Amino acid sequence: GAGVSQSPRYKVAKRGQDVALRCDPISGHVSLFWYQQALGQGPEFLTYFQNEAQLDKSGLPSDRFFAERPEGSVSTLKIQRTQQEDSAVYLCASSLATRRGFYNSPLHFGNGTRLTVT
Amino acid sequence: AQSVTQLDSHVSVSEGTPVLLRCNYSSSYSPSLFWYVQHPNKGLQLLLKYTSAATLVKGINGFEAEFKKSETSFHLTKPSAHMSDAAEYFCVVSGGGSQGNLIFGKGTKLSVKP
Image (cartoon, rainbow over all chains, first blue to last red; front, side):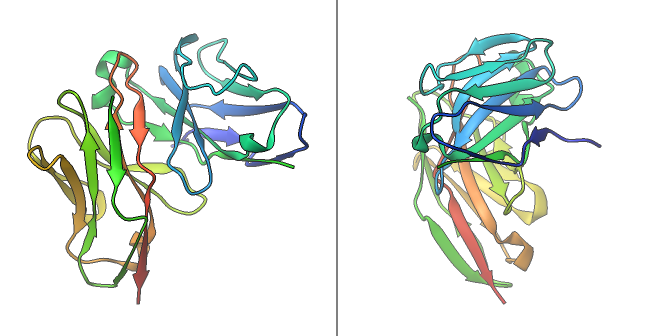
């Protein structure tokens, strides 16, 4: 069946440009996470949605980062005035479980969007 | 705070020999622990998870891991490596709180020689 889909697969932006990264989670999945994976590092948590509610945005590195999930399905991660340190792979993951049942239902990851800021 | 340390950034084995990927964790309470695998240009895939049931956890593709509280370890093993096992492996601990954030280690790249 269809998995988590992210687009674009690759994005090159000039420093100072705004970018928008899209995530299509698996249909019916309640929980949605965004992670940032720098080169040679493990993914780091950015933000979490339960349906349309953004319940945790403690991992967003600055106020240039903004995420939304207005209808509780598709999510967009927006980065304003991109900087070179924003270059990374941005991963989206979804889960059928709500936060209470989270550990009993696996996270499904997309293939990520590789952002390069020049 | 919860954290994991993967002791080797790169492990190289020959096909057919055992695999050992080491992971130590730090947690202020009984943790949930996971191993994920990431093949090149592919999404992360869950190999196995420990959630305070049996300490020896079996996963997919012949991998297993043993939770050792006394050693704060959760090493990943496989008796016989296959060429298709070459990938990046991440040890992961639950971040706690109500949102279930996952905290990833830096990863271990496994190479398998023919």
